[in-house]
Image (cartoon, rainbow, N blue to C red; front, side, top):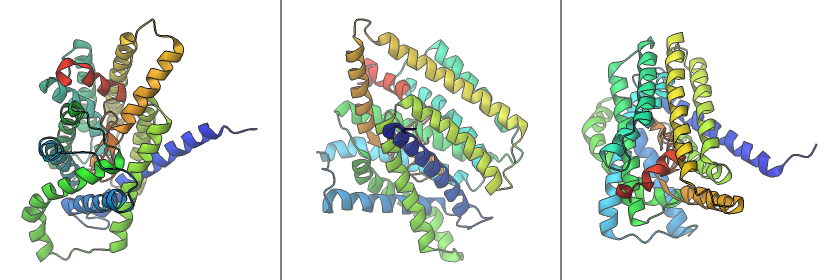
Length: 384
């Protein structure tokens, strides 16, 4: 039996992506949780990820010259990169802090709100239009999350507020990326995204760190293991590049399906690795309802894109356009889920693909809008 090499590599990259994405989230939870490694300093952990990613990107761009830096004026940096970095840092800060209060499984369920948050921000910023069919899907997703929250045994209002705030901060970052960076015609690959955004995010995180966590570190016995944090940062960086490989080999729909599969696997694994993360039947029912809303939303966006395609296009022309479309989307990257937004601190995903993973530092986790759905945002006159 002859194995198709291209198909094998595609599934292999998807496997690596799911493995790294789940691993980064679980690793972050283990490091931050008071019951395990007990390093309850989420801002510090996020700063370690940002500092490491920025340093690696600097070496690749300036020392080894793997990629060429983007021509960026101070005005563009100040008006585009700085605000995007601010909201990115905020999403990582709040998302990571949520791990101190709620379980990994419940966090993944709350992340189903990502398309709702992104749609709301897009409408408020004028990059998308309020539509009845989309609104009904958003209501379905919200109802599912509410049901899931009601079924949560260890519900914690503080952790929930942190996670939801982080989700809305990430949604606003996504919209700002489209309004600011794409409007100026800037494209950032994973390395240049880390190069420009990670240091700026580090600076923004320094202020809350100095006020909130530095005093705690001075009076508490906080254990610091170099190899733990180094390996954690390596995993986060590897996640960023795995997403880049996946985007290059597959389309948005495949990645979205892989993301859903990853979420279910992660929820199941978290209950095994962290026994205190109990899942109830109501949790599962609520999450399933929310996913139905997300799937229906993606279907609407896919149908919109197909409708907008010219019927006169020949099949070869359409394939060429689709290929260029996917290639373009995979070239535009902005800061993830480093964080499992996650509470994650991991990778970096394209502006169009940020739905992919919020756990990637500059991408990421998986925001929950489909690639095609987000592309629709840029098609409106007000978004360009």
